[in-house]
Image 1 (cartoon, rainbow, N blue to C red):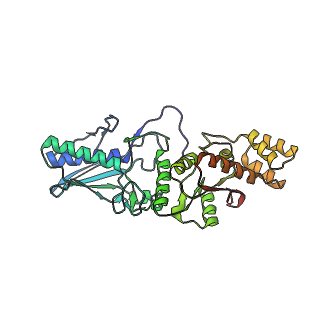
Image 2: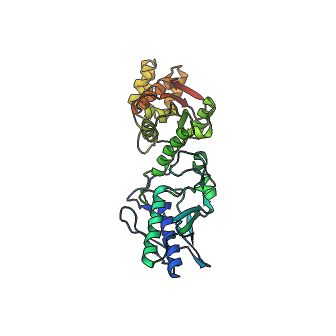
Image 3: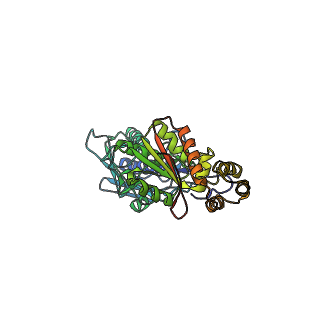
Length: 361
């Protein structure tokens, strides 16, 4: 995760807002022969951002407009991406029909807000685009029966850096956003992907999912339990985001895997494991070492250590199963968030990918 800059942060606009702006410009051009540039839209909460057009093409009854996504100060992978919408009239009475242009994925698995076989354009962006079409059609006295082809330049390559392939969204990115506004460092897109991963796992009948704090932990956990890619949730630092959603949408078995320091924080009851939002409490860690059977000298050394990695090394050298105790306490913290009926195990993994502590079934 990128480091949050100092000072006030600038908000940005979602891919859904950008697609709505491009739709508004392109359909207005079909109706009037001219593209509004910049094009202004109204978002669900009343904001009225304006977008400069990058592309404005009108030929043979087909209009294409594009805008560049500005995510503000959020480290969004789609910041700077070109969102492209091509509009053509559809069959009378057909309403608004969505199509995936280059760089927008297609849904292939159940469990997502959009059914399989549809372009990965989420419900709220669809509502925003449908509303824009209806307003323009009413204003100019023309039918609102259109085909909206939504694309993202280089979207297929960008999607490979997201969890879309694991969610069954193939060929490109999703068009997302509920308010149209990107709040910097809210991590809403990341947490959204965790939730959608759980939805897809449930819809495809999986009874065991896993969340890991990083890539090394993920590989180890997946190999340990023989899990499919679809069972692996993009938890990262957001243990709370995963566990709270699992409380409402339980899966029979859950594994949490992570590095020693991250899982110490979970054992402390922290649900956001990022270094900017939670810290290892060495006094708590010293108490855990005592519970694991450490002598007074080791307990003092743990309390005065400078890093969680140093503590793990001290415990291992002394033959004290501190990582097992951390795993057990982390499991208790996770179970406290869940509502019951979920079997959970915790696996502590070192930087080399070796399992150094475990708790649970």
